[in-house]
Length: 367
Image (cartoon, rainbow, N blue to C red; front, side, top):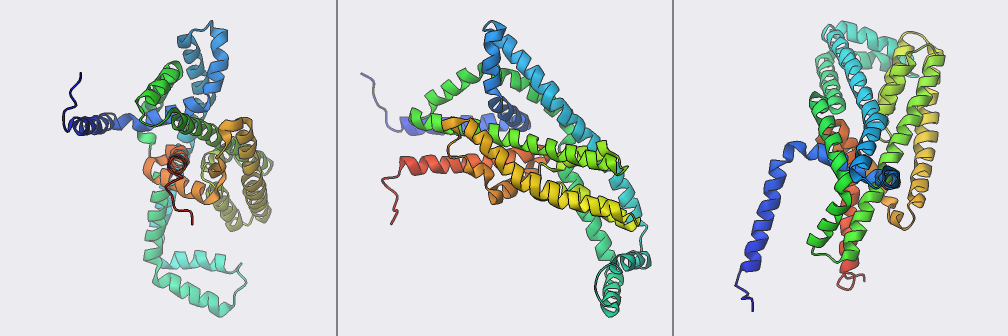
């Protein structure tokens, strides 16, 4: 009969914690790529299961085909968009920094004078505003420079190693497809939770990955295409503007405004009032109201219903406050790719709270 030695269980738990910490430390440079691949794999795993019978049951062949399809259909276009936008933003940033560096209090006041003349305020108020601008011109220029640096870092923060990131993601994607079922079963075996709660967590993660990934990509395509068409009609570079809108639209509420507001301001300065009005209308009404506030909830609702029982409890995916805060937090911590990470991490945390509440419902004070 086995002897239950004292402190054996505690010592084993310490070793387990050390092992987990050691693995996280060891693979820390690759965690972002692995997490991104896991989100893509779970979001598209149903397609892999449908493809498997057509590959004569070969998991290796089906995983290879799915990895190639995701790379060509999703990763490669997004990578091109990010690289193209990063190059263009870098050029614009350099030109903007040169222009800002050449400004002084007089030129800045002259610029603001032309802008203030369009505002419905008195001449005395305009004069007072100009005096304040002259007195604080150095601080204003410094603030604009710091803001532009922050936005640039937020948009292209991970692109310095983006090629490596993409390579690791595709490499991991293959194994998540091929061995995904075995990995989830092994996790369920090792988990001390009941199988019911293991399935609940895994199904919620799969559903969240599917809903958030497809809805974000769908909204990005809608906003990008709509702005590209209206830009071409106005004689503007529609391809670049559409791509920039598509990338920035990953950020809810304020995303597309980071592109169309500067275009509108530039058109006003150039005296092209028609372009400015159309851009403002398209940004506020079409993308801001119709697509972002009407189409986004509809897409999320339809995707959630398509998942059946697995989609229950995913109202958090359509919670504006949580989505906005987690998206910006992901952008700050991880760069562009954090636009996917933030909402998934936040929503999964809420799933863990739901599991805890369900498991300990008889112990919680609901009075």
